[in-house]
Length: 144
Image (cartoon, rainbow, N blue to C red; front, side, top):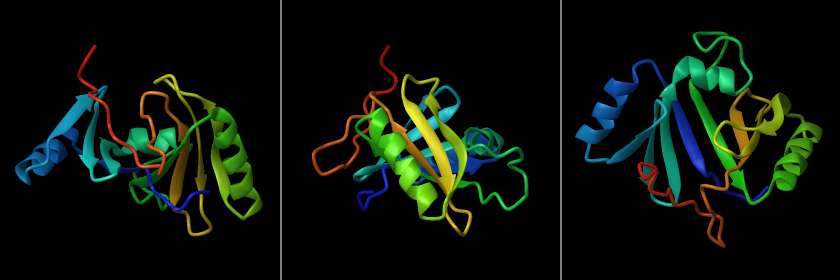
């Protein structure tokens, strides 16, 4: 696993309120399918409904049971890399909370929890190209 984070997703209770908060700080986001994406240097910050994020990470209940409302994402260049990294994490002691599978956005992703329960999404998203150094630049998500 390369030493980087591609996306940080915050599970929020009120997407509109959270979007307005970050915009009041001067951030400019792109809302797509009830998520808001912000470019934050070489990574993306995503706001998403807390319960939806929990379900997407393979957890039943986002309101409790230890879910902190945050998931880190590590984007890769291929589906094969996703499968390999999830297996590496499992062998290292992670719990795979969601096996890799095709996603609604045309990518491929799975999730694991590290030994302390911190969630990682491991993803290949052809719409979010990675630079040679692995940094992610969000595309214009509002274009058709």
